[in-house]
Length: 335
Image (cartoon, rainbow, N blue to C red; front, side, top):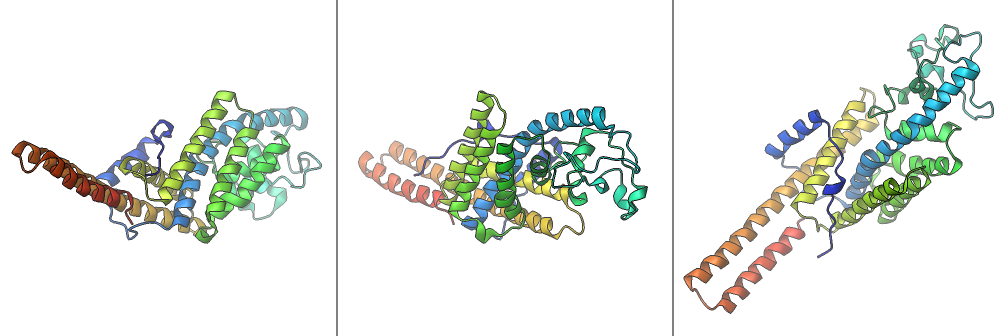
């Protein structure tokens, strides 16, 4: 049986509201249409969980002080907190490929391209970060949970304050992981892409200015998810780890739901897939629990037979072990 690594020490905090919803889902088992999940979907799911639960929180902690320092600097040098349509910062730095997008702040998008009516005052470091985003990506209220991986990676790529090495890896993650994940192209999620995704996420962690303990902890966390993900493909995870994956799937699904708009067809597809996967996982958990119960009954029968003197110990042991082996085989190879 393949070795599996416990995820429990690496659990991420879940908000009380999402936890209550998750607890309700545990009580009311959902029987999914998927008896098992395609390997491509499993890879897509595990990488999505890591992107949401490990990489995004890490980037938020890393990005926030850098953007805050840049904002304070620009307030001092360019008075961006007081600028108007007669004079405002158009690029930063001047050599940047990207123009600052003032449509993304102060409800300027409601002016429908009437630039002379825009409010150009940048009153916070969060608004500064939005100048480097397209308006449809600038719906966050802070560099916090409302700010998703796409916006975070865009900041790193487009703001000059970040080191070149970090920018390079961020660009690769956005192109090869995040965008591919958001488009639900499951056929793309081969074993090679799965492994390369973890390599890229690990490279990003190494490029960031982290202390040794934090860097090693996060790398170990990614390694654990990668290993258990491979075991997930082989169907060799027990009830607790499958349920933990299900919980993370539920949290990710709820997070995507909060990001949806009526016209966001792409993320409606992501959310639907996550809901289906969660249902399939709950169905699998039910099967695993049933098999565990069967195993317990076999052991109880073994103990009763010993007490009742039904046959020699060797005969009973061989018979019960055979039954237990068959049950365990079914338990860990559920399809």
